[in-house]
Length: 579
Image (cartoon, rainbow, N blue to C red):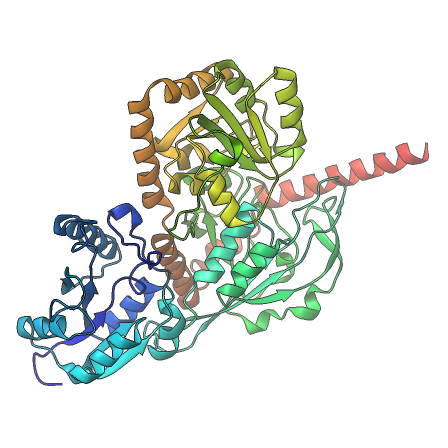
């Protein structure tokens, strides 16, 4: 390459950098601009190979009067700020504001490329052009740009993974990672957490296998885990994740490790094939991970139940500080903690809402969605709503325990609607886009909540309550809502939203800001990728501390105490049965 000449990656914008708008539509405000999954990883790979970035984009919406050049510059400033978070800098953004056939700059004419060549010393032969348009790529070829890369719209990683090698693993060896979860393709929060991570890991750097089973009865409890959801299966297939199904006949929770009965898991799984095992756990020692002793395990904890300092548990992901603090108190090894948040994957588009079909066009709507499980039922949301209900309000429940229906009848709530539970993200997002306030309640609280995080994406402020069990949700909601301790306080906050439009509008803005700050997909995925790379390079730091904490008395005494307690309960049940 001629000295001081730049290698440029020329990038189309819509469909490459950000989500392609619907046909004949334009991105006219920052709220509509959403980065494509994978684009950050692609640009980082290119940056390592000494490419600089110039975006060249047609923006006919200006000529059509749908936005001003000032509006466009705001969008591009917003885009550059998102890149800066990931240490990615753009050399330039060149745009054509004109209508078709009246200028030389609108692609596929080469005017914008000529502008770039005048402004910067560019080595065209060493440069490349990335677009979802064949016409644009032909233009690039004719102009002398050395490499043309055609991608499917909105899927930059799909093709680039095969063309641009990852230079981050110096041995050019992919990291082999297995996700293992009982009921792992259900639509539960823990399961979606794991699914989204597995789906968005860059396939040029990671080989991902996802092990899952369907639901099975619990020995010692009437609880039944959510079953495999076809929408979640399709989501994983759409993202190219290798799915491996195994069978479990039953889960025995009378045993401290919740052993699986009648399973073929070990016939499908070989730990020696993997560099990392990713879990989704409650906190205590759990089967089958107690039997996996050599490969690095990365735990993610989603309940507050015990601690597990098994030597080869390399890192322990906590989805809020509240969870981490409690885990340390229960005997967890502080040195293994890594803080993460939920990576939320929502395509930027219009999901519609349920207002018209429910006859609620001019109604202020409260609501929440929850799995149909009596164990999560909380009487607080409806008790509070009943106190402030009027003819201009309504409450909608998507899914939820049958106990909510009974409570609504008992309280005489008039404007309440129950929609069936679903794992279909399109319907869930349509529901969330219907709400004015996410009026949440759960008897055992939350450590972090996928449902609430998704509500924040739609600018929906949250009202919730303190729980006697888990209270990580208070930390995660932050300034985007209120977490209260009484029905009175809950009802007061609901009424504040209804009575004060300015307050409600401000809280909606805060909800969107909270989402971007804590749950935005690319930011969170960068964190997960860095954790896995660190585990791959240094799987078992502090080995002597590990040996000591793996024998920690607070952990082992507690586990055996639980085991004895459960055995006594089991014996008592048998004695009662035969008496």
